[in-house]
Amino acid sequence: MQELTDKLQQTPVIYVTRDIERACALENTPNYYIISNFNESFKSVDNPNTLLIKEERQLDTWELLQHPKTKDFIKNLGSANLVVFKPTKQIERICTENNWNLLNPSAELSDKIEEKISQLDWLGDLKKYLPDYSVKLCKDVEWKEEKFILQFNRSHTGSGTMLIESNEQLEEIKNKFPEREARLAKYIEGPLFTNNNIVTKSKILIGNINYQITGLRPFTDLPFATIGNDWGWPHKYLSKEQFEQYKKIVTDIGEKLHKDGWKGLFGVDIVVEESTDKLYLVEINARQPASTTYESQLQKDSLTTFEAHLAGLLDIDLTNHELTEIKDGAQIISRITSQATHIASKTIEELKKEGFILTKYDNTKQGSDLLRIQINQSIMEGHDKFNGTGKKIKQLIA
Image (cartoon, rainbow, N blue to C red; front, side, top):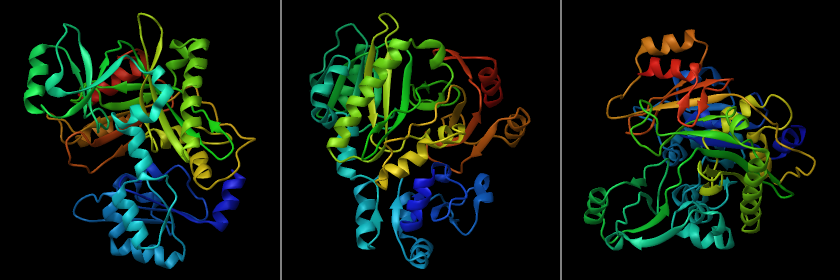
């Protein structure tokens, strides 16, 4: 994208991230820099535009920002316009202390939008898109012989979201967190979809809708953990009317974000109720969604999602641009579980022989990424149902 290339000549950008894969969607671009942890899968990107820091453990973004090598790298560039995966108040404080310009929207706005309780106030009239809900202290929640979703205010990748299926399960939560506030919602049975969108100064760019692969073993222990994306299956499942309704919900959210000063990427998760075909809003990700990089790599022509994200952060006019459409491709992530803390070398080699693109991670925390597997074709043939390619991956991982 020429406008972005021209802007980077005036405003160099440094992406600082724990996981380098999040930043690798704009390769070989002058004045675009990356600072991240060393990763064996990405050692080939070790060039003058990239600083890979190798320590005894993987450093979080705020720790990378405080590392002496980071400070020297930025000082030698003579310019510091930074981008991170998700802003936090701690990251903002470090940038302020070092006189670095953080391009991301504020952490305060991001938290207000993402947190499950405060989000309700922020949504205003847009709450009409949500499933039926209420907010109560856990001690006041009653079992009504019908399963439901319980979410604490802070929930990320499914860790704070629970499907309550019995009074015994509910009582356990009430006894453990009696005074904790929770959002309760009707459980909607059906497939979950997501897309990556961009707020720019001139328009809202609507991203490609993909099926969100969620909670499948052996890839995760958590029933609501996102473990992958499939860009092919939605085109077989969703009707034209559902595509349009999805885009209407996203546009309404994007316009409200723009009004509140948001720039760049945001993700929207929507579930389709199998019994009624109705669409419900279930989550807004006020940050760069994790699927951005691979989606951008699948977009071979014209404007990619990641390019549009940077363009939005840099106030580039995208009036005459649209995101490149993609209708195939998938990725799935194997996370650290109670049964799996590493991926065997033999499994890695077998997956490579099958032609999959692999990214191996050195994480140690429960629920974090172990291996990302990518392919330019669909791996799903139904809701929670793998096709032949997906079954091959599952067989090798198991």
